Structure formats: C-alpha cells, structure tokens
Length: 394
Image (cartoon, rainbow, N blue to C red; front, side):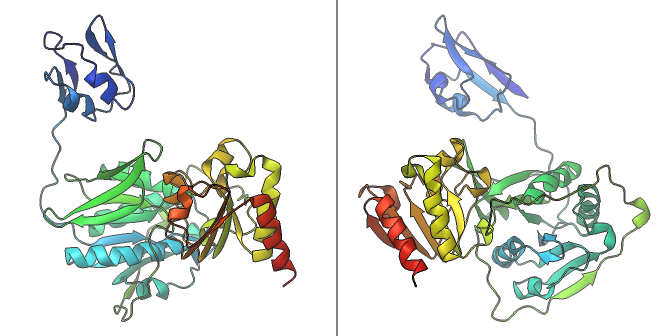
C-alpha cells in the first residue's frame, strides 16, 4: 500500500503538482518529487498524470463475510434525562433510509430517568433499545462506548447514525474503531445507493470548499455522525407500533478511566443556537467587534439567539460556539436575520433551510439576497437600531 513514481515516464509537466490538494508534490530538475508523509492516497495526482508515471497501490479491502447485518439504528443522545432533538431528526431521515432498504428502524437510548421515550417511536422507530440506570447519569464515555459496542455486536445493524454533537463526535469514533469499521463525520446528507444498497454519506471537506460523498462497501456497520438541524424532525402521521425494549447489562463489567468533574455552560449563549426559533447573525459588515452589540440588542428584543459568520469568529470578535456554516453549526430556525453577511457558500449551507430569511446588506449584489425571503439594501447601522427600537416600543 503506497505511492510510487516512475521517473523515466515522468516529463515534469506539473499536472500532478497542481492536482495535489495537500501540496505534497513539487517539480525538481524536471521531475516530480512526492512527499509521501501526509499523503492519503486520494489518487488526484494519478488521475492528472498524462504519462501514467504515478502509481498508487491500495490494500485490498476485507469484505465482511455473510449477509447478517440488517436494520438502521439511531443513537438517541440525551443529557440530564432530556432527549436531544438531533435524535428525532435522524429518526425522521432514518425512516426514509430504512424504507428504501426494506428493513427496520431502531433507536438506542442510554441514560437515567430519560423522559419522553415515546417521541422516538412517534418519529418512526420500530423498536427502542433503552438502557436506564444511574451508572449512565453522567455522559462518561467509557461505559457508553462499551454498551453501544455490545449492542451492535449482538444485533448487527447495517447502519448506525448519531448526532455530530460534542459528545457524539467524541465517543462515536471510539465505537467505530473498536468495531474496525468506517465512520464519516459531520455529514450534511445521507441517501441509499439502490444498486448496491450502500449508504451514501455526504460531508464538506477542504474547509467546506468541496462536498465529498463517501461509502463504506466492505465493513459493517456503516457509521455516520450528522450535524444537528440538517434534517427536519417529522412526526409520523401513523407511527409504527414501536416497542420499547429495556436492555439489561452487567454493572460489574462497567469501567471508566475518566470522571466528569463539572459541566461548564457557555455563558455567552443566552439562547442555544441550534435549538433557537429565531437567530440574528452578524458578519464582517459590522466592521469591528464592538458593533456586535447591535446584533445582541436586536436578538434580545426578539428573544433570539446570536449567530455569526466565520470571519468574525476567526477575527476573535465572538466565540466559535456562535458560528453558523459548514465549519460551524447548521441551523434551521423559523426566522434567520443575516446582518452584514455577504453570503459565502459555506455560510449559506449552514442556514439556507431556515423557514424565513431576512438579509440586511449595503451591497445589492451580495449572494445572500439570492436565498433571502426578504432583502433590505442599506446601511445596517441605521436599519438595525430602527428595527430594535420599533420592537422595544411594541
């Protein structure tokens, strides 16, 4: 497994150099020089080489024997006994995937005194595997990993999905590593290749400039984490007669190498961004960090969450937890107000499914107006205070 260069066939044309997304190829003395360290064998250079001087050898995939993996599973994450919305969103999408594959849809919930389990069946789950015990009152990763791995090995689902939350991003890769299967992180799209019955997992890459569709043809289960608010929660008009199965486990085998000392909430988030019905976001058009106060005042008048485009976060004007976009949070509020945001593709991908979008910008050609429900062209420093004052005065 590796990459090699036939220097006799290499003409030093530079096609491979420009094709390499990682900048690992340079032309030296009219021959290509490949820095192997850091190469992920993507094949872009091999495809670009007109003389076939570059060869990539990949290890043969180990195909899982048999055909005994069935079903779509969703990990229904909870915190403090409250099921996170992303679990219901994934069940709504999972129902579509399961129906295409003609298989069952199951939810897995691990926690203590979890409320509202019935909503998982209302969103389409045929079965809910529930582990409810004080041992899982805190989100200590080791016990969660051990129990989810045990259940997957026992029931052998074909597809397992989880939310790309801080907890999901942390513990789910460990599950995949133990099972020796693939994991596509931070997906923004899922569908089924009906010819091969494979899960097509789409995610942004290279800083959001490219959308990659990934498959896992040779290992099971196929695993993905999906950003919250990418899919909409849908209640089934006629929910399946879902069965809640309480799963026993052996407490004696539960071990944890870590201990949760404290949970520190982000005090800058007055309203949680991913759960907000109204979001007011500011962009580079604000000019300087002090002007974010205009956004905060408007958000306070609306009872809204405060969002931001990436440049403001990169400049240190506002914490990363407020960033909306492909490299931040994906949101789907009832109302999204974009102030001083031109509308880069990466930002719009994170909010364009909002029910109503209002854009305020002094550039009539700003791309944000192409997806806006309503657009206001003008000076935001005059428009935003007037709207805020009108809201305050009723």
